[in-house]
Amino acid sequence: MKTLAVKYLVLGIAVLLFSCKGKDKPAEEADAAVASQTPVTVTTVNDSTLVDYIDLSATSTILQKNYVKANANGYIELSNVKPGQNVSKGQLLFTIKTKEAQSIGNSINVLDTTFKFSGINKIKASESGYISQLSHQKGDYVADGEALAVISDRSSFVFLMQLPYELRQYVKMGQNVDLTLPGGTKVGAAVTSFMPTVDTVAQTQGVVLKVNTSQQIPENLIAKARIVKSAKTNTVSLPKAAILANETQTEFWVMKLINPTTAVKVPVKEGIHSGDRIEILSPAFTKQDKIVVSGNYGLPDTAKVKIIEP
Image (cartoon, rainbow, N blue to C red; front, side):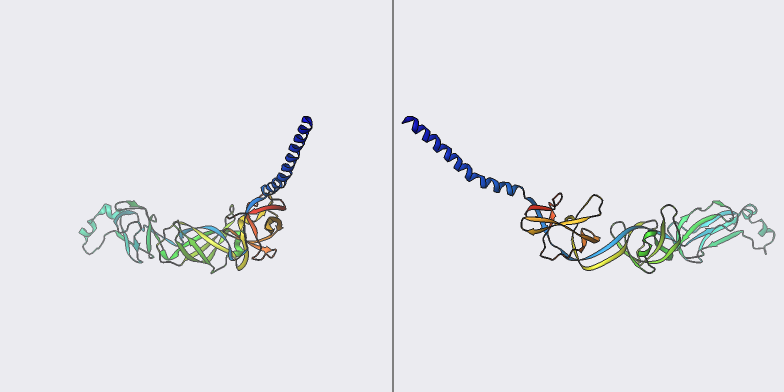
């Protein structure tokens, strides 16, 4: 009897263990299914205004510069200008006393009082502008034809943009161009002319931009010029992070949810890139479609996912 009781006890424990194991199996399977789901965040398509543009460098410059030159061999007796000074057309800039007058002095006038000889030559500004370069000061000896100063014509102030020739189709005469100066100040400009030559090495063509501002902008300042290639309004777009690509950037796709826990691969065709948005040309998504925007990298063509709050 004692042996029989032991056998029944062992059998009961085995049945109990098997029963408990059977109850735990569905729970384990459920936990495994949840663990296989990739946590993701989702988004929807938006109607956006997208602009495709390129940024190029433009340097401020003075196109018209007038060189003030000595008109005789002699010594500068008067220098009436300073660097950066504005001058007017016809204004007296320098006087030069010839070396002969410097040597003879006032002897001729003493011998003949009717002979008015001074040996002083006056040099005046041929155009209005500002003195951008000053080469000589009072007392310097200069030769005939030697440069004394440079007058920069403020009215010829422009920005010169170097445009890659393959982008020539996007820039037209009279086209408006936005310039951003260092510090963030924005200035409007317009295309007024194209330089007739192209840089041999860089294959860029100079484009003259006339600024529409009274602001005094210094020469040789480098600004950023924005050229608009194309623009669209009310076009379907997605965040850049939602779009995946192959290694050669020839195929693009998104992961679209077909139910709350399953995402599938959908090939897409891109349009304009603008900031962090990309235009979707095809297929035609609706605003109810949910597209995976994070956690999508490395997902298979069909993947189990779990939507989480961003």
